[in-house]
Image 1 (cartoon, rainbow, N blue to C red):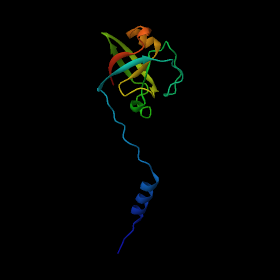
Image 2 (cartoon, rainbow, N blue to C red):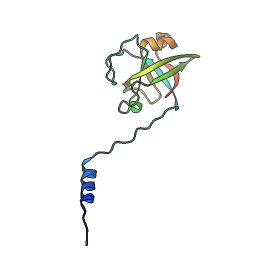
Image 3 (cartoon, one colour):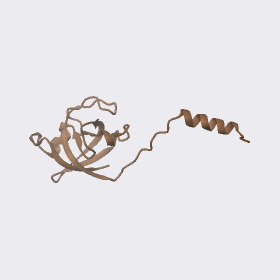
Image 4 (cartoon, helix red, strand yellow):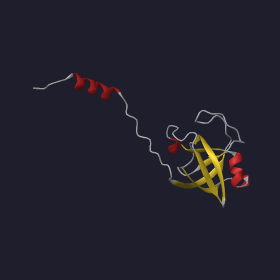
Length: 123
């Protein structure tokens, strides 16, 4: 004989009507390498307006996930130089280790005529 309790009915209803979000993978301390480029900031995917003089960056869409890295500060390195930036946007065209930097941040690392530089950074 099948016995149905109120608790089992409620659990069944809850599981069938709710979506369970995938866990956020915190990758703190993990190092990345990729290409650094510069872009013209505006209203970023983190919801804040920025301009070219801000020390900011955009991470690949795969890392930005649903904005979990908004506001995080990281250090980007190239050619013995480094710059601290705040993550404020996503870069849909970037691979996982790539990053778009504001003109102010990029100019701390290289001249604009380089266009694309090999960078390293960590979360």
